[in-house]
Length: 244
Ligand code: ADP
Ligand code: MG
Image 1 (cartoon, rainbow, N blue to C red):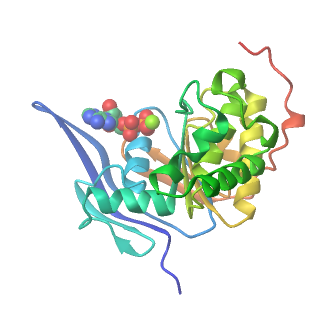
Image 2: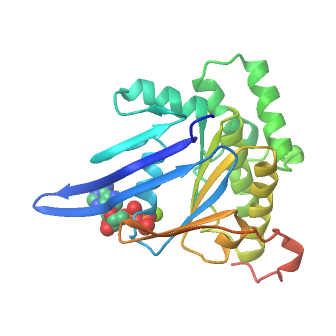
């Protein structure tokens, strides 16, 4: 049997700031199988982003082990970790993190540029990824000519373009109104059906109803971990708000 895609084994993370120690993770163990759509939920400061950064190979545990796709990442140096991130992982953030004054297409091409792909291939793949998120008609638009929901979809296309096994999304709906949030969740559900693994961090209980497994983190450890039947994300069921 294939190993779990993610295996976090008794991981702790301590941040030291001068004399002060912050114990952000206090012994977290967690396996996630390929194809799962998981929410990590918990109040602000509970350790969600710290856990996500370890899972995304952006940070290392203080103690404990982390295996990604069956492989212990501890011995890997920065370059090797960067290659793994490029090959296996796609990141989505609350603040979209798109380059301003740069078209949607060029934003999505960026990871492929780092991977050294030729121009024509980059264009083709980026256009395809934008099509997948429903933005085939917005390729030339820079972020300031797109709505928040469209910007987040560009960011999701950028995460998808290198065909990762795993998408890590840290508060991806944090800057979006309720209806747009559900649109983004509908897109994640659609991607999930194609077999991609998605781990989403949120502090909002509503958002966590749309996934197949909810892990609640509190004070640096797992308070609960439950599978559930996901609510189908249907944006048309959510009233349109006055958008700020
Ligand atoms: P969440 O994402 O759930 O809001 P975090 O994982 O960001 O929580 O933070 C967990 C705890 O670790 C908090 O007390 C936070 O202040 C602390 N923390 C996070 N990152 C750092 C850091 N780089 N240096 C020091 N403390 C940190
Ligand atoms: Mg956070």
